[in-house]
Amino acid sequence: MNIETQQEVVGDVLSKIKWSIDSEAIVAGGAPRNWYLGELANDIDLYMRSHCINTIGRTRYQIENILGDGVKWTQATEVNNYKFGMDIEIVSIISFTYKGVLFQLIICNPNYAYTNFKMQVVKHMDIGINRVWCDWYGKSERNINYTGEALKDFNDKTLTLFQDCMTDTQLVHCMKTHLPKMVKYFPDYKIVM
Image: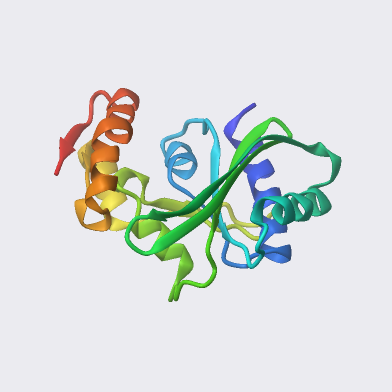
């Protein structure tokens, strides 16, 4: 698979989710970061909100209805109101493959007072280089959007850790798991705190 094909699959899935489930759904983090850098994504983190009590069962039903038989479920986890950053509550994560692409549906509680869901998600990415997103509708543009922090990390070859968007527990988790993984992906990049 090449980047263009991967983006077409993602655009198809994202557009259908935006039209059918959550108009503010976005793909953020590693996938658009990798595409920006000219590389395939390992998986696709798709953030959306769900107004359902049974988010896993109902969301699976909705996804199967909009995507059809090509969906292969791999894992589903209720995360018991995990806080992503300081403001976003994740209620479940559902993984599936579709046309050879692995998706992680990250389902957020819709009852939080999001003034701009997309930017709430992006600003809570712990490392600047991951503050990248796409929110494509249809087959038209394939723009990759990035914050100033992401652009600075790309240009300066840095991995800037944003501690202000995390609780102390999340910071410890980031330092033990996510930051070492990022250093492995980007060995020539310097850590900035």
